[in-house]
Image 1: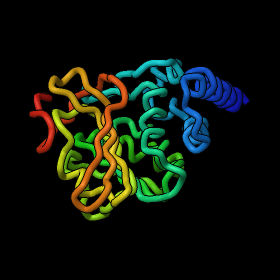
Image 2 (image 1 turned 60 degrees about the vertical axis):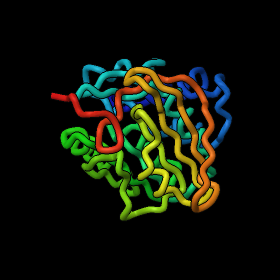
Image 3 (image 1 turned 90 degrees about the horizontal axis):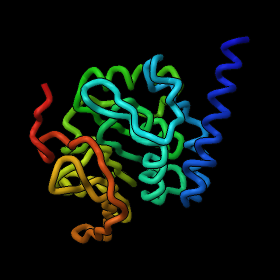
Amino acid sequence: MAEESEQQAYARRRQMMVERQIAVRGITSAVVLNAMGKVPREAFLPPNMRAYAYEDAPLPISEHQSISQPYIVAYMVDALQLTGGGRLLEVGTGSGYAAAVLGEVGDEVVTLERYQSLADSAHQVLNALGYDNVEVIHTDGTLGWSEKAPYDAIVVTAGGPEVPESLKQQLAIGGRLVIPVGSVETQQTLIRVTRVSESEFCEEPLIEVRFVPLVGGAGWEDRHD
């Protein structure tokens, strides 16, 4: 009974998060709001951090990474302008929380993680929650995953010095890529790239953000010890 009560408390807090942190800030997509209301953010945190699961803030996880603020997750998914379905790519699995949100939206999600420990833990949580449409792959995400390309949408959850050409080329025509880009590692502008044709891309700036660095062959140098 105590466990059921705890689950109900998390569910109430999750709904409050959707209403008070996301919907009031202008996110109106029913697809996004529904996804944010379904995914148990607490499941992607260690037990000692779960009390903070629905705070309006990012939270630290292992490997010097973080689980993004719920509003930012919602904003980035909303910026993809998805109506449901399709094949989606995420670069930077981290805890797996955003991948689960994408799993509520898309038919198939491929999520790429540089750090083996994060890939393993995210896979375990996603599998336990029944997200069998989300595939976690341990690899250099800056290069994308061409085996499943093209993707209807790509979201990058770390900040790079530029938009990787490898990711642009894995977008389907009409698809959108959302990525933080900045000339320094600690501050970026969220950019939306739309593939207009085989050779034409349209880029538009959205909001100022701060993400952990995008590390890899088409990102920043790895200084992680």
